[in-house]
Length: 267
Image 1 (cartoon, rainbow, N blue to C red):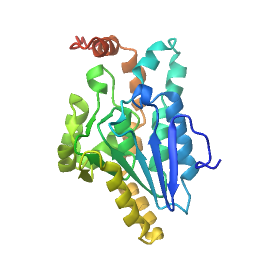
Image 2 (cartoon, rainbow, N blue to C red):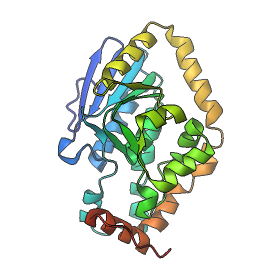
Image 3 (tube, one colour):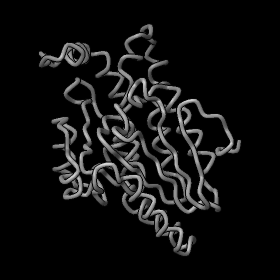
């Protein structure tokens, strides 16, 4: 499959020389990550994984938001799946993030507005993050009553350290662009609306470098920080099986849609 000629349903893809640009394009759902969008993101990443004619891949959303995270509305419309079906479906997010992490070209994420839940997990699987001045990251999973999965905790911890990782994940609070830069979550804060332009400038700098040592550096650094990642996250989808069937999760989702505080019982 030629990823630049393929008719994507939920992605807008373009290429300028050695730089590819991929935009999430599901505006009716604020780029919420449903199965179809995650499948397309995974397929694109796998198609360009070893493309030696690419030096950088830029991932972005719309001008006012990156992604609203996992599509809770779509999940609520489904029949109740079996544990086996849920466990299998639970690999869609990890597979997507792993596919983007495995791209040999340097990956950059340009974020305006909100980047929530699974959108954060995808962003931290890439090499660099550029945030517009009004952008923020947030993980709502724990306040909703489920664990943060998608094998993202080691990536988050590697970027910001253990205490800040716990704070970011546990409290589920919005972390603004300035704080993200201070913590190490992002690599530059651009003026509002200019994140994509700054990411393109980074891509141009990368395109001017010798590509072989750049790829070697990326691979070596990723290997250095990922040594214990598999051991730390091999059970996170089974933890999701547990938490997603709890009364607290049902209460958390109900409270989210009803815009009220949750009443959790530890059950």
